[in-house]
Length: 333
Figure (cartoon, one colour):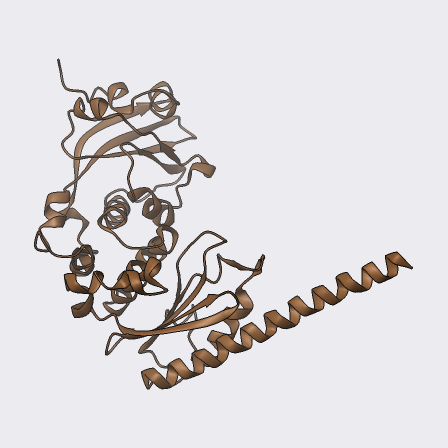
């Protein structure tokens, strides 16, 4: 009898959670409908972007995709149309949905806090986010923690940034000069060194910064596939490298013939920074790169090339080795 009562209690609790989740999802749908009216935009418009972390976060320990479905149904935005984008966050991060109108920069951000949707309306146009004063006010907003993410990805989408660049931003969860450098490095590699039969890329990320996230997305080179080797260096080790502006190495390996070539790459951050004034907000520099994403040669160069054999390849990628020392790319004492 006691087991029966306990079972009924548990089932009732589960049912309440399911119903409450459905109510919350319906509330998100209602808030989205109101946001469409606020933005004065119609369902299916190519002028509308939805940006959300829904695929990654959980609400009360459950998947948040049913909230996303509500927003898709109301807005007509989709992955196939290129106007439904995501940004990665930890599973316990608040659910966030933003509707962004490209022509005006107006945005409505819907956040789910304690099962209640909180809506914030503001302008995130390129001119607005390029003003230092704007970033002094975002801390007071519920969505303030994600404001840089939302503003940069939305505006790069509005500027027509390539989809693989936006997917890089999804993994990195925002756009910054670092992840942009990774995208430019990846485009340089694809342009200059297209793979031939039996060849594969191995990226030696050394030194390490945000670039690795874009390299993984664009080149499909990940640590899990053993196609990316991540090796942080100390300041002293970096200072001994003979390569100017070192940005890691590309190894092109032919596993069948046990041979290949290596390229030590450089990235010119000074040139990237020169696209915006020194005192401008970081968002300004991000937007300034939009017109240069198809011109990696402006920022990426080759410091050295070398032939690879099995022994040299293994020495470079093995844990504990300094790849620049192995390749003979250290300054003489």
